[in-house]
Image (cartoon, rainbow, N blue to C red; front, side, top):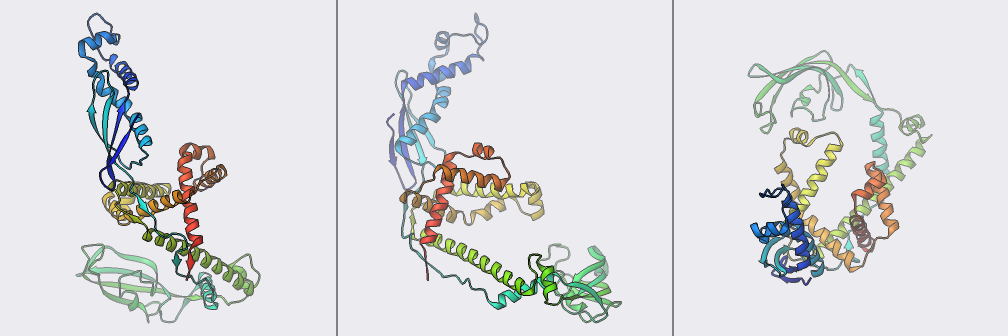
Length: 426
């Protein structure tokens, strides 16, 4: 086969090639075998017509379309390989010649990956990340643990912000109760902002046993449209006021907060180490993101094909909805719960699709420029990793993913690591 590639613009071109006579003959034989069983001819049992009789009655050209459909995919793939191009969409096929006894001439209009002109990507400058952990950081985490272990105790004092009140309430608009506007023995943390703006504030300063008429106005963007912007009153009874009783910062507290420590000093030391580890990991991630962004910003990609944008968006949707399904949430249920649609989700993922596609193109170009490869040990390690992550057997992972797919992911990660590690923090 002699394939010819003629680029017509940045991302499209014409791929012309011929299908040889031997391949055509094989395709015609298969096409005849396919249609033979459906033909009834006087003097022949159904499906037993000979090729010579078929050609005489219908002409061999009647088989051309079926034969082309049979041989074209492999012929196209071979032409693509010979031309050394990377299509990103289905081609538009035009038949240039289809004569008996001669090769068939085909022209395919193809959209290909755009060329990437790499800029600086090794040693890019990125912001230096602060990984120091202060005493204030440790004390903040310590206080959070105290709050988690706090006990709620009934108080006779007036309620204040941060206290929890147990209430009955009945809401009315224009003197009429409305759906969802009442509850009994409801626990509400004052200052949490979980109720309509102004509701919680009006309970501050009141004690258990008191009745309070709370007057509020529903926000204009309230999700129940029939209540949006309306004035409402809530007849509220306070049954209990509960306050947080925080534990003392001592060794007993430390043991309750973390079973791996025996003293408060040990707890503080462990908190500091955990915070340092987290800050270091976050700094590494921030450095990586900044380095990749710099490499992508420094590169030039003339034009990104719409087909690549569409493919990326579909992959993002499939992955996202697949994660929902693994959590027991079907696609229909997800759209109902979130009040969204397939189109709105698609629009959401389309916002950054061009950036994601360009990033992948640049990373692939770096893999090629640096001749980054994946060896057999790395392929096996990736299979082990995926099997663990998805709870699958290794053989199932191996059957689901080709070596090329695994190698692509590994080399992309190696490219990211090389960019990150070479970046200069300043």
